[in-house]
Amino acid sequence: MRGGSKPWLVEDGLWERIEPLLPVVERRFRYPGRRRIDDRRVLCGILFVLYTGIPWRYLPQELGFGSGMTCWRRLRDWNQAGVWQRLHELLLAELRSAGMLDFSRAAVDSSHVRAMKGGPATGRSPVDRGKTGSKHHVIVEAHGIPLAVTLTGGNRNDVTQLIPLIQAVPPIRGRSGRPLRRPRRVYADRGYDHDVYRDKVRRFEITPVIARRGAEHGSGLGVHRWVVEGAIALLHWFRRLRIRWEIRDDIHQALVTLGCAIICWRRLKTSV
Picture (cartoon, rainbow, N blue to C red):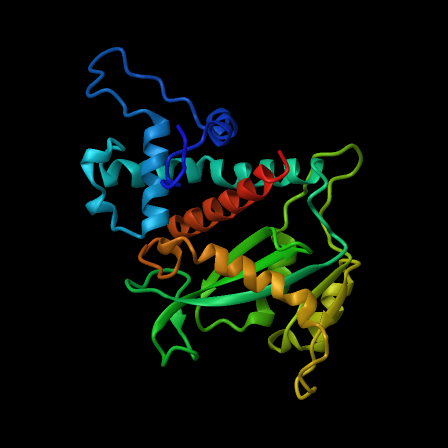
């Protein structure tokens, strides 16, 4: 399949990487029931929802991607099997092999999204008139490639997620020697200004570069921090991630991780 103007159509190169990660489901010999819809077509349906933001139940049947419920179940099952996380790590390793990862520095930031149906990892947001929402906490390397994203309630303070974000960065292989795991420096804005957390970051042998509250703007740190804002904008280019419609936090996290993997795949294609 070729994406073109329809980015939800899974490209051959991406499918070659995803297919080996999918769990094999044997068809029952007795009472086999209806034939299982092809995994690649179902993945197109998942991506269609991710890109367009359409509710699962309204997924058009004429597309041939199966029902919205089928796509939702497959997304859930593949997430439980670790497919999306392994895909993200695989693409990060390929980016490192291509010399496209820079761990000399990283940047962290967060973005609030409204949670229309509530659920775990939600809370009353102080930046959205107390509306129920969630936060996407993102860490990227020097070029803005997403390394990890965590999900919390909208009432959680950004600084409390600084250490969990660093710990969420997976070991990235792709070259001989030890895998990459820790950047040399971490850049953050004033929302992360707390000396206790600076000390915690240093224990990971990472230098924290965090703006001080009350300091004048124009310190120059934004030169290095803007890449994480760009990564958040790319994540929210997927319409399903702009607002959290999923009650289950694991389903929303699955879509976020899949979005990170797609961003990595686009970067990788530029090197081929």
